[in-house]
Amino acid sequence: MKSKKLLFVTLISLFALFGMVMLNSCSSTGMYSREGTVEKIEYGKDGYTASLKDEKGEDFDAIISRIRMEKTYKVLKAGDQVELSGDTIHLDNKVRILVKNIK
Image (cartoon, rainbow, N blue to C red):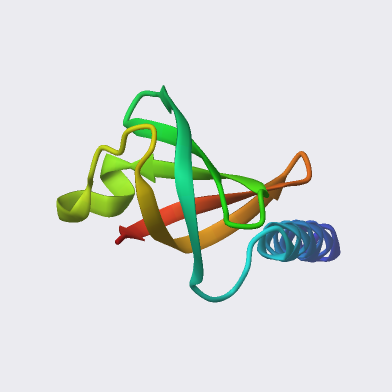
């Protein structure tokens, strides 16, 4: 009976460790910064997603959340030139910045 419990706990621990490794591999470890011009805004529950284009013509998204930014939250509009920094995720071959700071 003890060996079954130990095996069960070991398997759960390995599964949790594997999950954490996979989640960590999808995001970068440091602050990422990028400049661009806002193309369009899509509003959501606690903020919005801004679609931007950089100087090279590459598209990227910025996820701007009231909860993540707290007191520094800003509403951008199409045409704004901004520098964004934060964590990144990569979905559908596109960089998405989880914005922590807007300049």
